[in-house]
Image 1 (tube, rainbow, N blue to C red):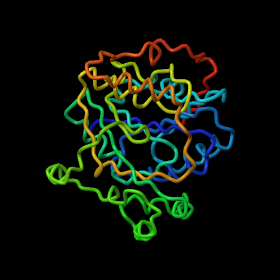
Image 2: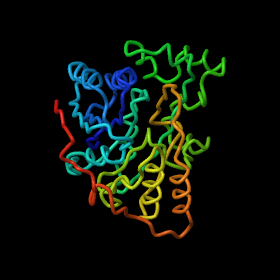
Image 3: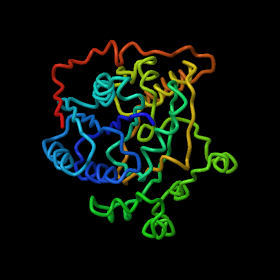
Image 4: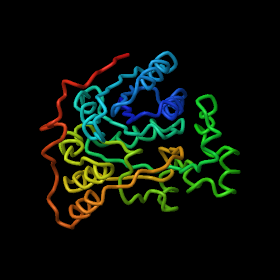
Length: 288
């Protein structure tokens, strides 16, 4: 199986980041490295990352740039730009407010076994506020195994959305029979992409200056480029820790739906991995 880069986007939440990193301790597939795309967090985030360098067997590289507003696309592109496709053919992308099932990385990488032109899209179980408070770095690995009793009780209290997504179905024909391999679009917290495809479509579009839009934009370009698109709600399982969600920029939403028009030939963004206008000299890289 191919080696993967797991890219974790973070901003000023070391508590959630610690829970996220803890879920990578016992992954069934070990051949991956972790890259943190940090959109300007305070020093306590670096301290948390340094703590996990001593815990996780995989190397962690921390990319940071100053906080001058929402610049997720820029810092993630900077990480992606450094990933050699020969070393990391598969790029798995997650957010710091998520917890991975123990076969999360394995499931993503397996989808790329037969393709170098694939975008694979996962989904997540949305944890409510009460059950989120019960998870810590010490017990988050309970979620590594699917649907623990704690989650069942929370679901009965309506404190979990889509608990059925915590049931892993490894058999492809059964997933198809149950309609579990139908995913309509890209969720930025859970997707993987062939590194060669990432470069072909030029990564994230850095023209998005506000929250929301860059993930859907990437999906549209991948689709229009003729890439293989697949997804599942029953493998690459992930759990989302509750927090107050930001509101999307209405202009970004409008632009997103414009490019969804059938027949659109939009396949490449001008400001991405190549053509970035960001001042990359202010990016600090802390290696393992």
